[in-house]
Length: 413
Ligand SMILES: NC(=O)c1ccc[n+]([C@@H]2O[C@H](COP(=O)([O-])OP(=O)(O)OC[C@H]3O[C@@H](n4cnc5c(N)ncnc54)[C@H](O)[C@@H]3O)[C@@H](O)[C@H]2O)c1
Image (cartoon, rainbow, N blue to C red; front, side, top):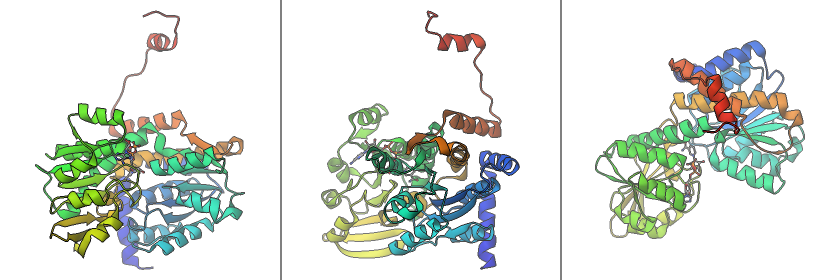
């Protein structure tokens, strides 16, 4: 093992841990109580320093872990090296091709897990299609992201899902901090690192005004950009409009935008007809889970020439009339590829919910039927309470009278 790489990974993990007081506190509790003793976990997560802190917490609780990447471009090789030294089985390397990416997931599954952790449902999908011999042992799982939950709910509706999965994505703490503040800041960070563009005065088109899109729009506006929102949901579109954003279909927005950011979880949000209408120098970035939001094939077909790597993570597509469109991170998650993903302080919240959900599963799994489960409310509240305590922030508590007032319909107003 390259000792310089391991040392760099350890430094990076140590830096992340400084901003993760909740997960660290849970790790200390796990080390004392060992709630995961004997549990084998296969995880498919972004192999980053924050994930390494989660792996350390689960290991402190007694788990044996194999980890594969949930995105080939986001792996931090130094972190992977350091994790290997801690005794976590890591199957990940930055920039691997599709075939290797899936081989790594298979290798993580070779641990024959009791519990699986997924981010986008790839591992659960392989378990249910190609590695069905392992299903009997698996008694629970956690899913980290919106797209993964959508797939799991479809599987559950078709009675295809064979074990209980906790929707870690659906906690109030995760959605608010990870999708909104985390994706919001790191997506803008990725675009700035890749292009060094000045956002003030630019027109930034955000496709999708969900949790992530709202965060991206707020940050872009904060930097002085004019923000245009595209939506398909009338309620979200109205909400965006009342926030003061210009709302348009992509057809109109395509002509106006300097920077385009897709965060819908959908496919073909920016298509050939939109690309053909864009200005010279338009920047295209995706922060939704898969690389299908921007139709990269259509971009390839439109382009007369492609200049790869005009800047790190930036490819320039030259159209027939000389206009240049700049695609960031090959249309994959820009915040993970061109920046460092969510700041550690944000991952502290979702990974703390993840760690407590694994402990909950370890306790309760025998009595749970296959299906998608919400994170128990007490886990959500516990994470927020620990985070507030770490920040030295106190909140009010209900008086006995207030409690009674809120919970008794017999009392009039
Ligand atoms: N980059 C990251 O780090 C990161 C973090 C969390 C989630 N995600 C991903 O981001 C995506 C969005 O997550 P979310 O939590 O905001 O979901 P969400 O469901 O809250 O929001 C998605 C929005 O996109 C809209 N939409 C769907 N199709 C559209 C289209 N064709 N044009 C315009 N709008 C459209 C929906 O109406 C919805 O309002 C998901 O794929 C999720 O997995 C990425």
